[in-house]
Image (cartoon, rainbow over all chains, first blue to last red; front, side, top):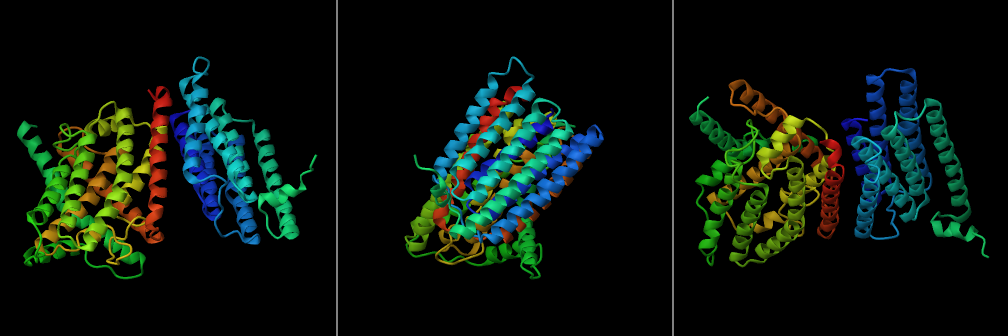
Length: 216
Length: 318
């Protein structure tokens, strides 16, 4: 845990905050790539500082899966679903901005309660990653289109990763490998689902999918 | 080194800031024309333009009062005073210890208000239209600028630019709140200087112009002063950017080697910043005027988050 990591986490939080208010799907994907690049940058610095096979493997996986495969998949998906236009969030922008501020404040205050148990830097890293996770959840909640919900999920995965990096030295690399492939599989299944839904309904606004809910 | 030579260095620094302002503008225009696949005018073209405007006799509207004639001088004077507060090769300007950040924002506001009065003085439609738009942008961007400067002031525990730069040079740490402040400051920089997503500095199209509409009635030496002032304002904001976020390399002691190092690094930083500015401007389209609050609202929120992060994770950094 260093100042450098703390700064990276804050820039990742910045990316997440920008994703919340962006309306164009392509910009959102670009911001997600930026966030994943920051994550890979962190792994690279760790791998250079303490050279080990696990870290290099982890860096390789992050670059391959998160920076190349996932954005490409998402981009293909938006092409396939013809999603070049704007995606309107459920609530308006100023409300979203205030919500993000409240969530970040909440996470930071939550972190303050741990000050006696952990070193200051870890607490700061923890609260910023927690804030990132909250913002990712907000992205999942407030967007109408399902693609952005996948993006929210990926952001959530990123924040869990940096949460682990902030509190301990990170996950063991087997778990990391598992997580990456989980996410990849998840996105692939999501993609298949979305394609089915598109074929079935000709659109994939969330409210069409809600018809599938059972009424009791 | 003696007291006298240090004062001479500070004075020279301020004058140099005023002198290089049109050069930066020339570099920016050259880069922009390269981005548009044109061959640009000379780097020194702004100087030639100013010289041409200075020797031309100005034409003043019939019903213009003394305010109209006085305003360009006051505008240029305000911005020239600020040129003595920003760093170029020394870590602080001559007047930096007398002018804290609130005074700096205040002088920027004073310069703008003077121009607004002068634009409305003649009573043309364009003047008041430009003024309204300019003040609309200003009232949204000024709080952001104050918040960004306040964030840095809170980090440095001192409200002058000198304190801030010195703290950043000595601490040499990355603060989590700074990323937010930096982005907010970039928004303010673009909005205050009428650069691209907010205003197109090279257009005289009725529907879109903001700043140009205000100075439409000016000609001759008055226009030259205003244009020089605009170039200086851009330079001041870029130097503020350097001093607030990347002051590394600036001279903190009085020595020739330090000064040369400071000058070289600052010129390099300005070179890169203008490069980025030109690219950013070339890649963006101008936004509708009613979407400006969206952008500046985002900037306000980022500045606010920056302060929150600084305050609540501050204990970790010290």
